[in-house]
Image 1: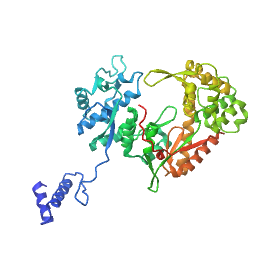
Image 2: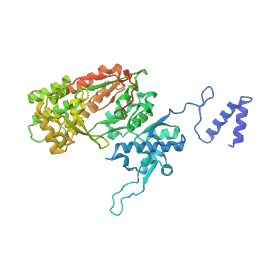
Image 3: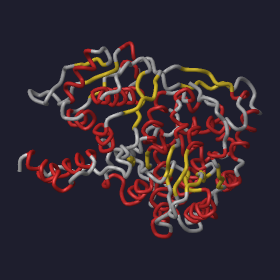
Image 4: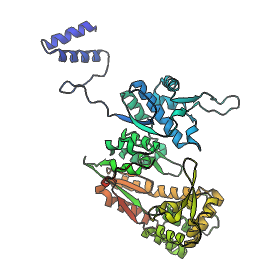
Length: 487
């Protein structure tokens, strides 16, 4: 059917109708003839609402136009900036290997033109060396990094204006059911019930670039979800800066929006460490096993079979007094109490434990437990742990000596993920399937109305292995602080 015939049919059907409606009908007829999607207009003849805007965090010095071509550049810049922050001992000089498949997902089928434009504009540097794996050479892809003028760590949040780019961003990080398993997919299913309000997009209040990336992706509802080798569920909620949780709300099954509650297990890692040490004592083996004990092996009345110092340690954890007791022992020591700490940028600083407040001492306690052996043995807090509970110190040293310094952290995280992701979320799937929930490692994020029930679920799962942790709640949305993050 020709256009003139379509136009005549439209005029006959409408008679003396207004020109606008005649034009709309003609568009509909053409769409039917060529099998095109039909545009549906609002009642006031305005265009329908476009998809909600997406945002990315790019280097503050990058001048990128707000066009479709500019969208692709922005997406590429955010990906490289985020990877450069997360990888390498010297991240500002780190080349990122990116496969052609990944580039196509990020920037579309014409990704080569996008990269050429980024290099031409001085935004990106390219290492064109690559190998397909032939002639006894391992395969590796081309690599890229931000240009020198943009490797400064400062960033800004900018919008993605094109609908195609927004749809592409939504599919670039699709979840893997095989990796996440049933409980992880349940968390993904509820992720979009949690929303970040527009106030979170104010770049001036967010100090670190990786935090800006996390906020931008959360605002996009661009869900990221993956379970690591220890079973921990990593998502936008684990990446979102703690201060930005005050901008979160959650939509409940009845459609009502409410504030979020963060239900947290106090002293979770030291408590789980005690359970692992207790299991090792029960088996009577001098060596630490290379595997985490089966969950069922931790059940039963094992508390009466372990040494009194382990029971005392567990009691301090369950009452929330462990960190205070370790601080008391540490501060009673004679001589300097300085601890060398390596920052993420590779710089070393000395921390004076005498100047640490009771609130900030908690993080310092976990450092020797998960640190390298030589640094651990020089840390006064490790000697405080040995004084308070020798079996804990002996287990940590033996595990690191036999299986590497990361062994203790791996064991604790595996047991934590079994409890929080597999068991607690499994309970939600059976009993509270419609209730929005997310995990942040050893904590649950739920609606304020569901806080008490979330506490009961966590308590039930920990009690199944003989532990009775102290469980506390925070309500981030009730904070009125507008101070910026530390850079």
